Amino acid sequence: MKIGIIGAGNIGGALTRRLAAVGHDVFVANSRGPETLTELAQAAGATAATVEDAVRDADVVVVTIPLKNVPELSRRALDARRPGAPIIDTNNYYPQQRDGRVDEIEDGMPEAMWVQQHVGEPVIKVFNNIYASHLLERGRPPGDDDRVALPVAGDDPSAKQTVMELVDQIGFDPVDAGALAESWRQQPGTPAYGSDLPAGGLRRALAQATPERPRAMRAS
Image (cartoon, rainbow, N blue to C red; front, side, top):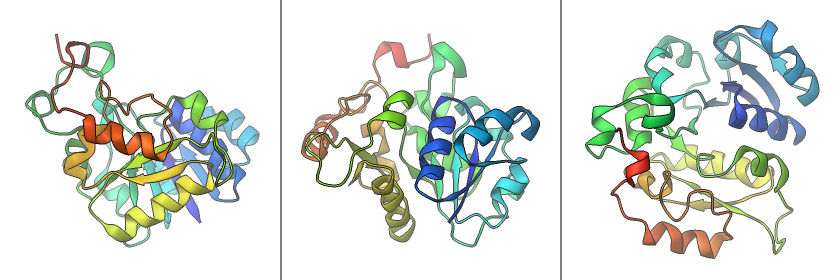
């Protein structure tokens, strides 16, 4: 598949490497232009591209830019992907460290719902609860006792299935985390965040989550 990755930070870089390594045609873009991505692209076996070229005719698009920058993402650019192609949201809200205050999220809107509202298309939430280095290094074959599970939340069954297959391909057990409205269960501050749990443990962690954000994950 052609996979367009918008954002080349820690998670974007790790996904560029992992998805290219399992045979996908990966195009990676950032806000500074493809010339700044030459080293990553060469190391990963991917293609450095503009956002428009990364998304055009893509079978999957990954949005992995700081949450505060999501409103600047062009809806027109996302429309250039293949019809119905899943849009993956990897975002987390870090109000004190990076993003500033977002009133809707402070008032209880899940981060992924806010992203979906701004991109104007359904999104699938995944890859937000694992550290980038672990995403790069801890993939294991199916059935391995040490295989880490990742939650996948979203409302489109077909798109979710496509994304869950990608999660499996890069070495993690996908766990259906329910509707996008339930994606708060994998946000920072919950038992599932940064936990590297197996599938059974992840399901329990998701069930144990509470919607109230810890003080460190709220705007000061």
